[in-house]
Length: 204
Image (tube, rainbow, N blue to C red; front, side, top):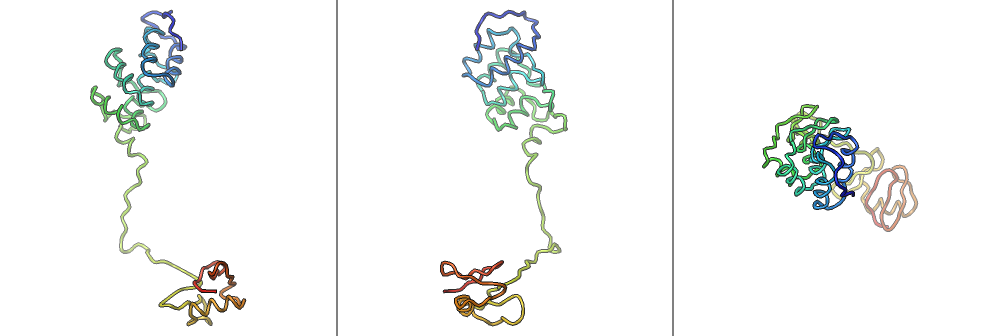
């Protein structure tokens, strides 16, 4: 992170400086970043990279609240600026990345939650974008549960087809122990009767 004297003017619009500022914001402490922005470029706090992002956008995304407030109060950063990719302001970015403490600070500095992005979404809309829609069930909706195979009813195990009705759970277990096939095939493992494709209760 260079702290050399600035080699630009107060009207600097250098794309290289903008890229360097954006890259620098991803690392370093907030105190180091303030020193860097002050010394690296006259317009370090307001330059925009190829995607239209400013230092304020990155500070909001990364949760650097102290730096964000310094940009607003000491460097006159514009919190209404939108990036080129999505039309997001710093408020949109702080909300999207879950930096609620930065979002609160931006609102306290007169940020508007109603500002819309390229999709017409406000900051609040963006926070609820992935929220599941409310589902209402009606009495006319299909709500039956369909089952097949071995059934357990009132202490008895019944087969899905004819010929096995009325056999108790214990009988099913005995049949499995003797090696008889029940409802397609039965095996015993660990004291549990395992029916291929189904599970029936029983003791070895």
